[in-house]
Picture 1 (cartoon, rainbow, N blue to C red):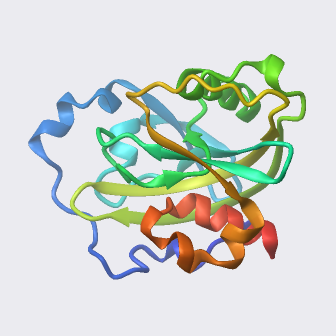
Picture 2 (cartoon, rainbow, N blue to C red):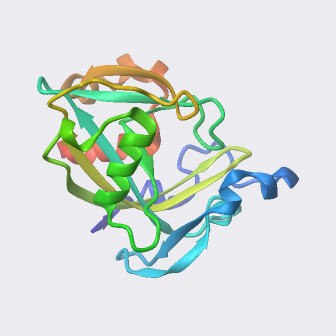
Length: 204
């Protein structure tokens, strides 16, 4: 697994390091959940509180992002709901989350596809892990992502969707190759950093 050096440098965009933890953080729903802490090789190091993993300088943990395609080479971009604590309103490609202890990346992805987009397993048969990388990015005034992120892909035979409005703010099918070749045309979408890294590596 190759680490994304630029992404792991802490604050590559120069847009602010971690800020003092908000007193309301303890009441956030993420404070009730755990994620899997990992070393740089994605070897589990036990579980840590999800909110702790995303505040201060963060704790390296296991995550995934899944790119959902149709049969014509379009990737489904999903806008993160405005209520999201980190990267609210940004566009992801397509769902991203964390497996819980004892759960595989495929199992976690299948669960989130159903919960966020209403996609059931009978709509696809090719869910697979295609890549893995480490990155670290700060989100100004809110927190940090420090993840060993698996990339999964899936192609839908049936593109029927039933998005959860608490998770998804909007949806857009985009030509995957065109998106990669002409990022300047999509800049107004504010893509999530982990999706941009996954896409860049996919075409490298």
